[in-house]
Length: 216
Ligand SMILES: [Zn+2]
Image (tube, rainbow, N blue to C red; front, top):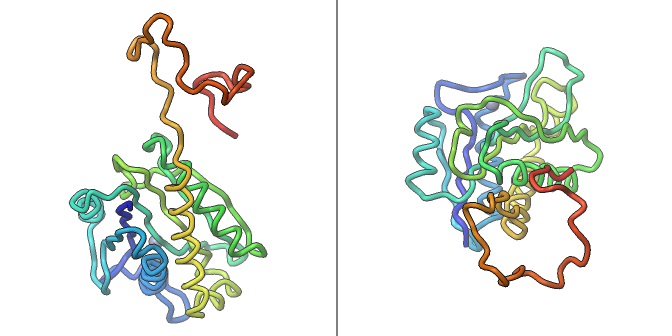
C-alpha cells in the first residue's frame, strides 16, 4: 500500500481558470475525489483540500510531507488565449526526482487509454513550485476550459470521474512498475572479486542502452 497525495488545484478566493460560469477549482476538486475513490482502499490517499478553500503552494507540499506521501499528483485544468488549444498534458520539473517522469508517463498513458479520441499533448517540463518535492510528482492539465468542446466535456460529471479514474490508474501503474534506480557509480558500490552479477540469466547480451542514457 502506498500513500498518494492528490492536489486539487486552486480553491477558495483563487478560482483558477474561469469560463462560462465554470471555475477550474470546482472541476479539479471533482476529479481529485474521483481519483481518490479509484485508489482507496488499496492505497492510502491524502487530499491537499477536500473543500473549496485556498491552500498555499508550500502548504500543499507540507501536507504531502506530513502524510509521508510516496507520490504527489497536482490536478489542474488548462486554459489558453487560443480557443482551439485542446487536449491533456502532464508536467514535471526538469530536475525532478527521478521517478517523476515515469509517473507522468504512466498518467499520460492512462489518460490516452481513457480518452483515445482526445489530443495527447504528452509529458512536458515546467518550473512549478508545487512540484519541488522529494517524491515522484507531476501536474496533470485535464483538458482546456477555454476550448468550447472540452468545456462541454468537463461540465459532465462522468467526464470528471473518468479523468479521476485515469489519474488513479496511472498512479497504480507507476507503483506496479516503478523506475529502476538511477545508475550508481561503481566506486560507491564496490563489487567483491568473484561476486559476479546478481541478476544472471535476465540478459545474455550487453545492454543496448549505454549507462546513464535515458529511456525513449
Ligand atoms: Zn490551474
